Length: 215
View 1: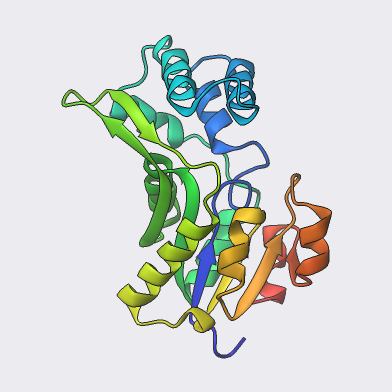
View 2: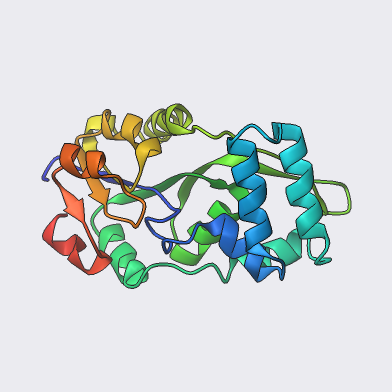
């Protein structure tokens, strides 16, 4: 790994636990995550169009009275990382430039990056707030792999580090475009990681305490 200069980190279900940050957030602001799951399932099944699904989800969060940006950021402070993540990030930061590239909510990615003291970060989902700081809308894409690859290129342009001088750690299908561009692909084995990915990517990480054996 002598040529590796940077580590690209996925966030949801890689640095965080197997429960997505979306569901953790819904629970942390004080509402029913099962209703959240139903809204998302109806969207994926075509029972709700994108605009309707967004309205239903924002309405669900609004019932808590905690959709002001400060409340949202406080909730994201409590999203759980996997065991050993903080120590692993400290270890990696001594050797490499770190960057989080995630399909998660930008507000959460910002909070998580600050919690882990990671300077570079990019997020696909954008929360939109009104002039009073209340959540009114968000932009979400179901498939985010190509956008993640665009973020990788932006990071490389910014830092002068080549994609082939990066290693990437991620758990799912949306990480595949980045895996195809970097010098080293490391599959984090999360609960939802498919068998196909396990067979395709032989360098694997099952817990963050093992990172010193790989990098």
